[in-house]
Image (cartoon, one colour):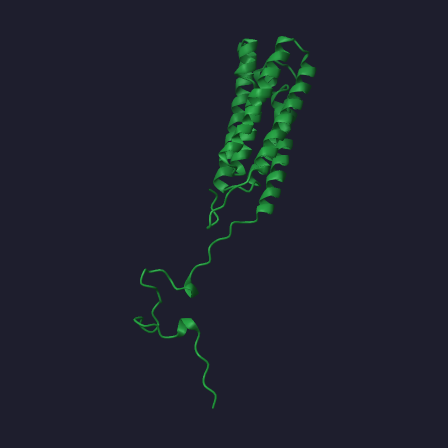
Length: 236
């Protein structure tokens, strides 16, 4: 008569362990059969694709927001312009659409949910503050140099969008240095256009082109940034 098969290792008697008790080693760690499976670190390729897609979507929405805030919206809200109410509503809808696109881009990023939510909140708050400051500046007036260097809507909106996206995609700290492109490119060129008394349409076109260039720099730096992942899947 053939011998009965031996029971699995975790069912074999263990010296010093009562039958049915949870087997542990003297240090208290569970035996391999009962050890929990460590969480995976995720798919780096998928995260990279999400970075590029969310960044591109953020640039599209950010361009709509910047174009709206730097056009007639502050003028209409300040009461200086007598444009029809329908035009104001249309402009507001356009701006809200752009904000919604940016928020969706941040929430679609591969970073932690808390970081994505904070990034979206920061961007919305900055947009509201910039619109209010521009409307106040239209009514009270401000020195052109102060308006260009301090209350510059282009710089603040691109900074908020770039910082928010870098925060949402969970990049290393050194990637935030790409935000210096706003100071290096934005402010000197905008100040030079103001001092040269360039016509408003040309000034707007140049600043829109610079906005796209700076956003592209931030996108490339952030999307190519790599994280070192610890054994349990947490970024370090």
